[in-house]
Image (cartoon, rainbow, N blue to C red; front, side, top):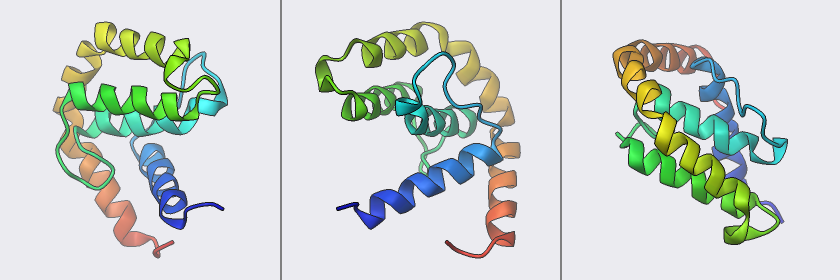
Length: 119
């Protein structure tokens, strides 16, 4: 049975990812798409989906854990570790450049959420 909270959470992730212009995963299975969208929200806003501040290290850790939960091999799957290593090594520039756009993204999300009825 599907957990209604979990379903609502991923709907919120998808909505916020769309608002901040996420493109999902590059060269990765659709299996991990929601993980990538959540990670994009973290990187583009510097916040969790619920609005709490998040560090780059924590965003990357959550990304890896999300992919591990979805991987058929669980924590032993290679893709979560490869993607995690890639964002740890190459994500610094994206994190820094997005901090300057953080306020714009937050404003877009808040404006859109105010204008749309609840789910």
